[in-house]
Amino acid sequence: TLILGIETSCDETSAAVVQNGTKILSNVISSQIDVHRKFGGVVPEVASRRHVERITLIIQKALEDAETCLEEVDAIAVTKGPGLVGALLIGVSAAKALAFATGKPLVPVHHIAGHIYANHLVKPLTFPLVALVVSGGHTELIYMTRHNQFERLGKTRDDAAGEAFDKVARLMKLPYPGGPQIDRLAIQGEPRYQLPRAWLETDSLDFSFSGLKSAVMNLVNKARQRGEEINYTDLACSFQMAVLDVLVEKSIRAVKKTKVKHLLLAGGVSANSSLRIRLTERARQEGIELGIPPLELCTDNAAMIAAAGTYQFLDGKHADLSLNADANFSLVE
Ligand code: ATP
Ligand code: MG
Ligand code: FE
Image 1 (cartoon, rainbow, N blue to C red):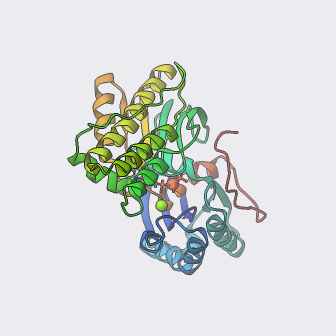
Image 2: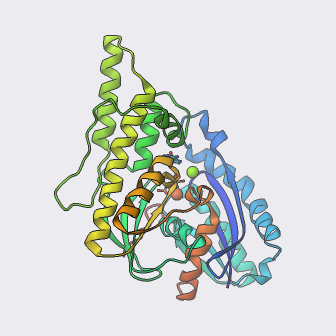
């Protein structure tokens, strides 16, 4: 099967061609980071406009890079949600137009399913498995027993991990997106600031990062009032350690609870170098087989959407031309 994937849920315009759900023939990504940086975050209106300007070209390039054409693909997979509705609509409209013009099936894909399937492009998924999804809008532990079937073991009750990284980075006056900046600083720092870890109820696989974010905010504000110096490198390290302690521990607990052997890391925050190292180390100790996507497949891209879309397509989960974007699309029925 040859699937054309389209992704426009946030600030990356991307199109890709994937063969048999595993082989990337092309993956064209146009990031808008430079456009949004001056605003300190993604501006939805600006994102939509940029997607409109780029989408046709990006799709053409993806087909060219793959040395194929629309007639050759079996289906068109597109991110239906979640994400920014105006941004999603550009991808969905483009996919619908192509499906209408070619008569090819249209396959709606959940963005987070895509992030999980980024791992499938490295090594085919082995079920049952647990996936730690950590991105700009999500922090969840997902349990899968087969393709296309997602059960949620836990999720964040407030901020997503990536969101916490971005907000704390903004507080430290670092440029957007803050995750990579904190990652870079943290490596050089010492975790000498004491910050809270939200373990929640015993047995809970949920997360919470808003208390941590507030604690960092209070620490910075108090220091500023008192005219004290803050070592931002050490603060970045302390903050990151507080986040990673919980992410790593709860992932291992989820694996033990479900008695699976396979753990996957997914979503933009999986690009975090310390998270990759710590989870790799811990999984090795515990005898768990860990999958981590390469950096270029951690953040938003259409190859992961085409990969997830392949199994939707094979399961006959097609949409008709009434398909609509859904900003709050749920992964778990
Ligand atoms: P979602 O996938 O939940 O809809 P999104 O698509 O906006 O949200 P992604 O593109 O998957 O999110 O990931 C972006 C997030 O990943 C941002 O919050 C960014 O700060 C974070 N991130 C990227 N690289 C790193 C890193 N090295 N360390 C920590 N966080 C990172
Ligand atoms: Mg992005
Ligand atoms: Fe994402």
